[in-house]
Length: 89
Image: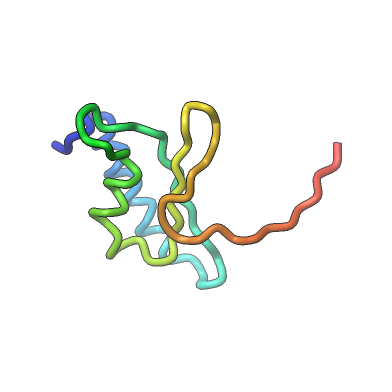
């Protein structure tokens, strides 16, 4: 069991499975794993930081993003492409 609790442990395992799948995509494709923000109750660490630290050798070009409670994203690992998009309503 990790330091973040059972539900976070399951999230970590699911992300590892997703990472294996995403690494098989064509090289021009950027895979993303988005993890919910969970801060360790004692250490100044989040689950996404912990996940990347332990599994950096498996991530390759997969980007890891952390979704906060305020609906903002933080890039924890990898790169985020410069995307230009236009939206119409």
